[in-house]
Length: 452
Ligand code: TAP
Image (cartoon, rainbow, N blue to C red; front, side, top):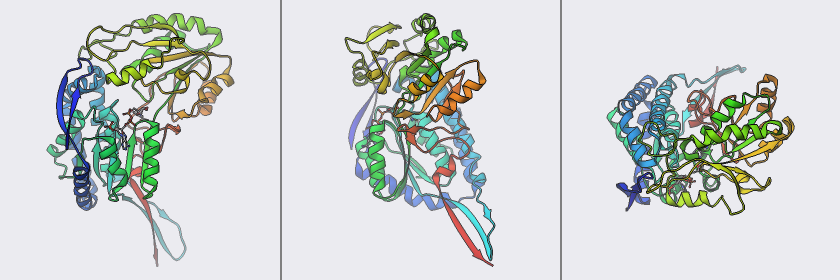
């Protein structure tokens, strides 16, 4: 075991130190989860549901504490952090409705009866990034537990505090020991062991596309099941017939929320050429007005970046030749601050258009017509999210069908609801989380024929 420190990104002060698990500790947790799996699988579905509901209630009772932990650990604004803890509660309540509804089917055959079952996989390993430590973990563990699997969760080393608290709450709510464990440590140690340990039957990974590819390749060795939620470079497409005031007023929050550290960030704003200048005029005050500062302050809209190293990476996208249209503000003094920044890209190969910045930097560029907008939006290996702003319903439908992305919204920037499916096209991921089929992703379908 080695020791790691948790730093508050708004103050640069150490808020906690914790033991980082090694391979032996990870193996021990996986083996405990493996032993706990039959008991959890065989429990009456109604009893599993009841325990998940109690877990949800424990999260609700601890909501303010969880939110404050996330403010201190990840620099999230208190408003966002409360939403995130509430999302865990809601995912657990929704998941509590799934065990009794994992229905198989009866298929007509001659000479017998054919039925299907949805069997749990066993141990599921969940690897989570630092940008939304609570919700992303819950999107995996809620339905995985509902389907009768046991779970070992690895939070990011930078942000383990809320995950460790969720582990305590699960036990306090009465989940049997070792059904849900949290093991904090490095990805290359703990996460990698999920990939190689034969008792882990599925790996759920959220993080960078680069590491996601390694996980997928590693899992191929044992034909391990995998769900991947990876990066994004989502387009916010604004047509000339849109409500421009609303589109411009909301665009900053679609990319600068969580300081742009959001896989669904609409980091490319595509604006029809005839209204391009007008849109920029409206966007400027909206960006300058984003309140950046102390995340614990109720009025704050954007906090700091997660670390000094990440701030350096984000700053690296702004080269001396980069044309910055305008920026918002940022506080002076300690903290990994970076102002909301609007860039006019030099051309289609500009890095701010092709790579995920994962910070508060947005590129604004013009398009000519519908076909041009679709072409630019799809000119990316990512395909996670996006928005279309128009008053023409037919256009909204044509464009949403043509854009290659998993989660689109029209005249809105919403991406995530726990009762609708979420996931990416192309290199943004593999599989779907959330929604009515969430638990199915943690099962194998078994077909049984009974001769009569
Ligand atoms: P990564 O560096 O990929 O890390 C994500 C997680 O994987 C961390 O827990 C990390 O552990 C672990 N990890 C790193 N190397 C590993 C390895 N070789 N084997 C197993 N696990 C390993 O990503 P990040 O920088 O934390 O997160 C940002 C990325 O996540 C962005 O690209 C973003 O778009 C993506 N993201 C996607 C989504 C969805 S839903 N599509 C949501 C949020 C974020 P340690 O860091 O603790 O070492």
